[in-house]
Length: 189
Figure (cartoon, rainbow, N blue to C red):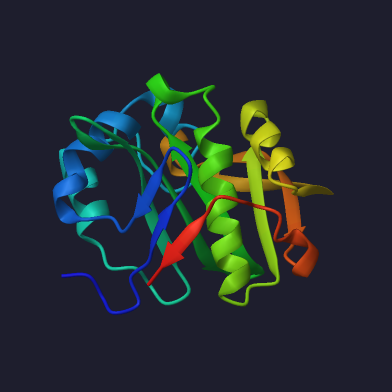
């Protein structure tokens, strides 16, 4: 049963909603590819059924907002990725992944704009993000969302690479009133 602070976000092509336990199969199908997992800090490789079930059954921690990115269509609304904000020691961090068959279609940018507008509405003023240096596509997504490079390259834990520390380029976005430029977004609680 959704918590009373559960949010749903609609964009032009996507529907962002809470993660439900029954999403585990879609999550496994989308993230269970080494090229996806090796770009994420927290997901293990290999990524298996138990990992997907645990992820989908987990409650959001305070300061965390996780959304399934779904693509509504005639056959339902397939989960094509995840996006969320989580509280790190040095601030609020944006994280996301898109299933490989959906790369290059602008879904990460569309979902990101919607989530950032919601974050601004919730009172967040600064969001941070990063990407591993061998994932320049994620850097392009972040720049399209308005993030600016901080100049920092930070060794960052990568569970999907066996716990290796991987250099990540860091970004920040200030969500002042002028940052509310995303359009076509409706959020409801």
